Image 1 (cartoon, rainbow, N blue to C red):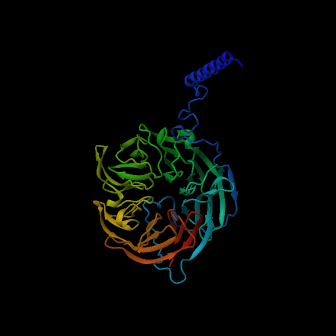
Image 2 (cartoon, one colour):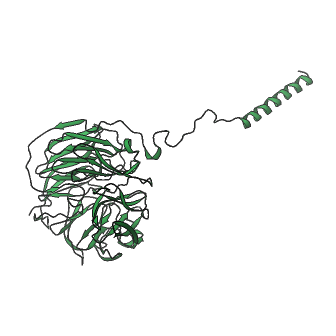
Image 3 (cartoon, rainbow, N blue to C red):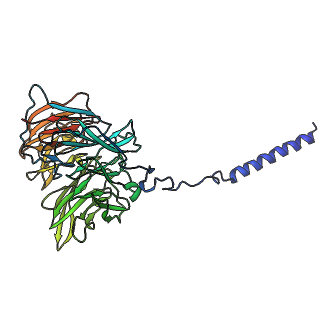
Length: 474
């Protein structure tokens, strides 16, 4: 090879290299890619993939024999949604050496859904992992015999459990909400399907993290649902499935884990809902039913599980976990117009706060279990006066701490369930904590968080995978 030929080859290689560098620097490697716009994958505004679901399609009947009874625990927190039983039935205050009298138990899909009870029948929303279906189960309260199931196929993955809501039950109807916001209305006696509503599909609702936690409400044969999305709240005729009214959602608030609470104040009946974005009161009746009576975005947290605790004087106590703490607001009414004032707001270490369960208002005082970030009093049961919820009247003490489980009052006794299904009986008092007894209901339990249900002396509780009925009758 001559020197001249070698120079020509080197010049050609150099030229090719220069052209390649210029092309690499000027070329757009993304020209054939498409922009992933929010909502283009069917997840925008919180809309996860919407599966086509035929609500109520599956039904199985197993038995029609059960022992009728007289009492009910018809929905979340009982008939008055205050977690206080009004039953005259006398209950034990000590378990004795034989321990709790377990009447029946059933294995369930992983979750935290509690039961509703109606005159001898218990209803629980479950997720059947084998069938991949939401299932409403009906049991005999007296012996646990399964009567029937009604449900629908839907794909749900574990996320600290799946089902976590409580049905609303009346003499005529049963209303449920599944993990992915599917609403189902049935005839109570037969389990026959009446209507269904996919509120994600219809209203563009964002399914809450950890799935639906809101427990539905039936008020005068009308289903009341706090939804978020394109509407804030909706009322549906239980008989026909007809939408009676829809509350606008101008602020774009979203569904929380909190439940709608009925409240009467200033001569107006309303529905109070603590959404993601704020809290509001919606007119429950009259010509403006479904309209917003008042609202405030002063209370805004990304995870809200406890429901608003509405007191007779217009005060509403709000609390949530994950460092949110608490807020006390007060309604005022003047010629039918409502205003909202923030009275106090503080961190969980500075006063009464709850992470998951809603506090109890009893004899003019508030009772609740402080969250894990509640400072030196963390996980203790505390009593406060609503006039100053940062001033603790008494605590259960450092040797008597509880978890995220439920608590309620019945027969002048307070029942408290720890995460490991240890059941405590205390005497409710505005002066001091009075321990009566404590027992482990069953072994190897964990995450026993579902709210209680009580009727005719039978107490239903559960951990994440097992539901148990205890006879508390004297």
